[in-house]
Amino acid sequence: MLIAIFYLAITVEGMTAALSAGRRNMDWVGVCLLACVTALGGGSVRDMLLGNYPLPWVANPHYLLVVIGAAAATIILARFLDRLKTAFLLLDALGLVTFTIIGCNVAIALEQPLLIVIVAGMITGCTGGVIRDVLCNEVPLLFRGELYASVSIITGVIYLAGEYTPLPHDAVTAIALVFGFALRALAIFRKWEMPRFVYTRDWH
Amino acid sequence: MLIAIFYLAITVEGMTAALSAGRRNMDWVGVCLLACVTALGGGSVRDMLLGNYPLPWVANPHYLLVVIGAAAATIILARFLDRLKTAFLLLDALGLVTFTIIGCNVAIALEQPLLIVIVAGMITGCTGGVIRDVLCNEVPLLFRGELYASVSIITGVIYLAGEYTPLPHDAVTAIALVFGFALRALAIFRKWEMPRFVYTRDWH
Amino acid sequence: MLIAIFYLAITVEGMTAALSAGRRNMDWVGVCLLACVTALGGGSVRDMLLGNYPLPWVANPHYLLVVIGAAAATIILARFLDRLKTAFLLLDALGLVTFTIIGCNVAIALEQPLLIVIVAGMITGCTGGVIRDVLCNEVPLLFRGELYASVSIITGVIYLAGEYTPLPHDAVTAIALVFGFALRALAIFRKWEMPRFVYTRDWH
Image (cartoon, rainbow over all chains, first blue to last red; front, top):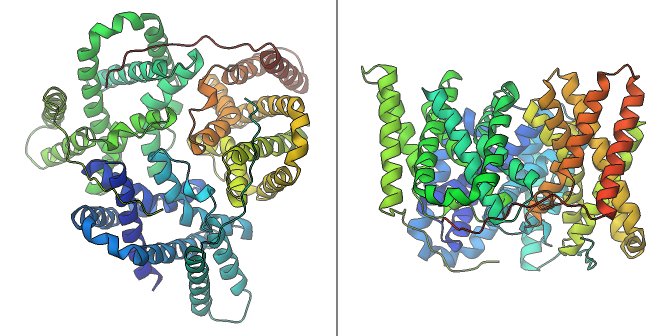
């Protein structure tokens, strides 16, 4: 099931990245590149930090084709996507949670300590969007108030905590998925925000 | 011959990066750093993604000295470089194609599948300029309409396709070099551009 | 002693990054993430470039907790930090020099050639700040005139040169630390700057 959601997630991440690229008037090749970097960047950075080779898309090059296909579909269908805004936000939330759990699994398989497992989940879920924003020359959304990294961290904590209960592994995965997804959906619709740190002195 | 063109290519990439740094009024050390990151960044990112260590400039530290020398020469000779604009653009095109073929060769030696070989060539040819533009706080040129990544991809495809013909390896390399170079040169002089994806809704 | 200064250095780097995040009105999670990336990014990039795994914070996850604690303390104590500007600048200078020597030591342990040892020291000392500035959507300070990379390079050269003298290793370390620190402090207070390369033609 995680694998099915993973394909859905890279498709959705690729499509939202393609829309970001369109807002910057990028060309078709740029749209596809930005989609690939966004959808596959999180897992790539995680594995480069952990020294876990080969990277996912190198071992499974068809991931690239899935994301390029999603980007191409976005270019063609852009005019129809406006009505799907809510669906996209929810699918993106599902992707965030799925990526997080997959990232945790990778770090667990590498026998990393608990803190690194949580961090690996968060990097997998969040880094793609950071790279997208840097390439679009914006301060990453991740740092600016949305409950995004927080949802990823909480999802990872629930997932890890569940492993210490007698619940079967699949049930723990499902609980973490549902809880993380619900939290992110609530954050979107209720416009929950993290408090900000506002500091106005300039030292330079 | 590829090796000779490689040295020419890192020199040219270092010089164009130094000019970018000059437009941002960077200091001399910053100019040299930006030149190194630009000229050697593509191959470094490729090898970090493929887990192929040591990186080229770690195995051959004199590459750094070549690029620093090129950056220093650019600082000294900047006033004379204006007349060489066309020569620079053509040498940069030659560098793009050379980097691409070198990147393909690295991935072939690692026995990667065909799609990864093409991607490795494109990363080698294009990523240095992306890092340069990010460090200069600009949306990378690569994403904005020029036939640059496309030329790199097409060069890689020609190079790989040639290996399935009875032509000798050196002839295939030469054909890919000449064809990719000609395509890029035509794109420059005829101002060929990729179509853009323009999307104006803002979801955030 | 280097280890004690290392903890001080990641604390200070985390705090100055947190202040940068506050100037951008980032949320609390963003502040902690930016602090971690800044304080631990230099050593991570060095080890990823050298293929030296595991990365420092993966092997010692408590580094993350130290930096997150420093970032949290900064959020709470920000109003009192203004008076400590000079102390911060000096501690940051100490961190730069300490990171540089630690980076040199890593490359020496990997039996890298001298030039790579110097580069590894500079990457360790300077890259964290570059990543911070890129994520804050600014042209990195490193490239813009301050004697920062230069101090790191000179510290590395002194440290390496000292190894060829009959002085004991600890004395060489202390000399490089003190000299590099003094040079950076002088550069701050006397406003020494590197000459800039100003180039005004735009080719694009």
